[in-house]
Length: 479
Image (cartoon, rainbow, N blue to C red; front, side, top):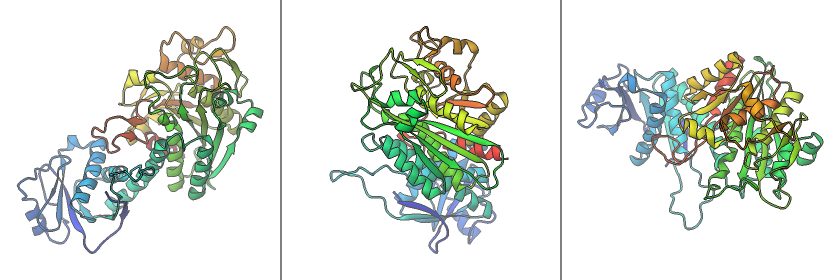
């Protein structure tokens, strides 16, 4: 597989002809139309979506199929398949010529190529059979708009891959102190501001949720704050909050039956926020955005918090712990309360792998969205539709909030009745956000990682879901 992809030109380019099911030759086909027509006579090429055939001469034929087959996912998948096909054919430079690709479709192809190019090989050892990626693929768009769309797609894929790299990092490496260091490194490279609120400061700030969840670990928890502050900002102040549980054993409510495997992905909310900040900085969006990563490791020890503990969070709300495996909402609650009281944002979005219940309800097809502000919800749903990172609205009523009431404290972190479990998480979090502030909670437990590759360009592992949605939301709010 190619080690890198770049946008540019090369003297030894192959012409990549992307055509629909009718197999019409683009009028501006590169060099000679006769050569393009000869290539399109290839007996095995039908022009169906995703078809890739090496034609005679220096031509590669790519099928776009009928218009109804041209979905964003189909184009991202095409990009991933195209990367593999070019690598197999040892073609390292292509000029893309097409009359049928618009800018959004070209961007999706480039995005798919960039996502498929990513590998997490950091920990391969001497017994590995994996081949070292090498070589650079050079891609040029046949016209200005297509060329620019490929630049945008590859740049966005790079930001998504920042999130995937963070998510894939194993828990013996990615511990709370490592998250702080990594966030500072990324911030320096992206001209962002970054600071870390350590456990001592968190205690002074009354962040009982963050402190309790992390107190069973030998590495203390922290809150990471990353800021994008352009000189001439518009569109208000957007705060993004990411659940960043570097590993989740469940605490004393221990995960059983091998339920711990894959819990390194319990930090995918924080990964999405980190990747979005990378993209927002790269695009120099003219809107103030602050990211907060609520970072802790949920472990078991004689210092770990317990069911029946009562803790006080940043805004003074007391919580009776009934389940130490409902820890994500505790760290998020302190982050949300801190954002509300200190940053005073115009909008808040939190992203979290919060509940298994949302996976039961929605599967791996979309994330669960909770937002009771009609205008802001429309903005989030519109951004989700434009980026093909789907969300589905679930209710959050006063009855759900009342369901979280405790006899011994203000609220429970989990109602033992287990009814409406995905909604319980959102109802709990609602106690930590000012009701006048537009707020959206996105539960990404079903979409943050994949166990089966299927047709996804990301394959098995972390998807980077949320990076595009949050970046597009910030873009739309900036106006």
